[in-house]
Amino acid sequence: MSPSVTSESSTIKIVVAGGNYAGLNAMQHLYSSLLANDPKTAASPRPNVEITLIDRRDGFIHCIGLTRGLTEPEFGADLWVQYSTVSWLQHPSIRIVLGTVAEITADKVLLSNGDSFGFDYLLIALGLSRFAPIGLRSSTKAEYIEEIAKSHALIQSAQSVAIVGGGAVGLELAADIKSDFPEKQVTLIHSRALPVPGPFKDEFRHMVVDILQEIGVDVILGERVVAQTPESGDMSYDRTKHSPMPETVGTMSSNAELTLASGRTIRADLAIRCLGTLNKCDLLQLPLAADIFGDDGIAVKDTMQIDSEHYPNIYACGDICSRALVKLAGVGMYGAYIAARNISRSVLATGKLEDGDRYPSQLMLLLGKDHFALQLGDEIWEKERTREHVHKDMGLLKCVEVMSLHKEPEYVSLD
Ligand SMILES: Cc1cc2nc3c(=O)[nH]c(=O)nc-3n(C[C@H](O)[C@H](O)[C@H](O)COP(=O)(O)OP(=O)(O)OC[C@H]3O[C@@H](n4cnc5c(N)ncnc54)[C@H](O)[C@@H]3O)c2cc1C
Image (cartoon, rainbow, N blue to C red; front, side):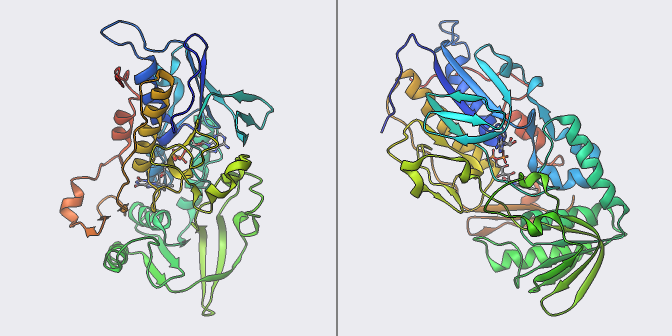
């Protein structure tokens, strides 16, 4: 179903809630098709459009590099790119609002400070919540630099570190700590027989365990942590209330004792729990679509409209969607591309909405600087083949390029 189009002369309001991989990439493609000058006419196709980007942060953060950002804070500092440094975001038809989305209804986005923003089209790209230190509490780059410096100091001063949770984040964090601080005792504890939950082969999981052991991480599998003293903030967190924001709740405990289900105890100068994510569907007050919100996020159509005939002008992309089995930056950016083009098509009344393709499940783990593992679909790649796709900066520059953060996006015609 193609949503209604407001008249040519009125200002059309587009709100993008969340401005990281998905939201910021959507901004780029909205800019290309609605605001950039068409070289043929030397004018933009739709000057009477107002695009509002709302985010609780003042910039893009390259989450993919965050584990190394904690072990190497100078590298970490570069991972945050302020919106104010992106020239095309300063376009007069773009407004950037630094604020926290508290509620989304059928026609407006409400912020925690009471401000509200009505929309004709909405793109929801709010991602997932994670607890600190991977979830970041900071809203400005200066706060962020201070935040990672504090986490780094805790890691640096610990002689022994225990990471609880063998998902992608726990694995990469354990590997980055051991690679940057080979003298530390690093232990990874995971409750199942093999790490890496998700649609992956056991052969891939074994490969990951072998790599960790090769770099010197002590891997304990099939052991659940049943008690921890002192407890970290996330252990008593009420996940049903989502308040305070998970990003403000810490998962690091100093001088920790962990008791495993077998009765074994592990002592560590620092324990860091990396135990998953929380979704943000509770921000959405769309009563006619209650059935499309699940634990895994919002159901969307292939057009990236939310999967409800009642709200054709509301789109969602990135980690907040239940679209992909494995939540990835690239999947979010691609969904954002489709969503932005479809919103632009509706605004410009240029015909039928397009469907996006589905990505095969994949996971590339960056396990320190010299080790990596990739499963793409059903295929496990050889190390040397994978190496060609690994960037020393963990893909920061590539993302900056793909999202045009250092250059003007070109005009793209949707005719
Ligand atoms: C350590 C780590 C390593 C990873 N490695 C990889 C990898 O190698 N490859 C890969 O493809 N993916 C990787 N990922 C996953 C990838 O980071 C996510 O898939 C990606 O961030 C999703 O993008 P998104 O835009 O949907 O959400 P996010 O990047 O989470 O962005 C959400 C945006 O919404 C804003 N926001 C959230 N809530 C609110 C609110 N209430 N009000 C206002 N603003 C809000 C946030 O500030 C943020 O800017 C990794 C993730 C982590 C944490």
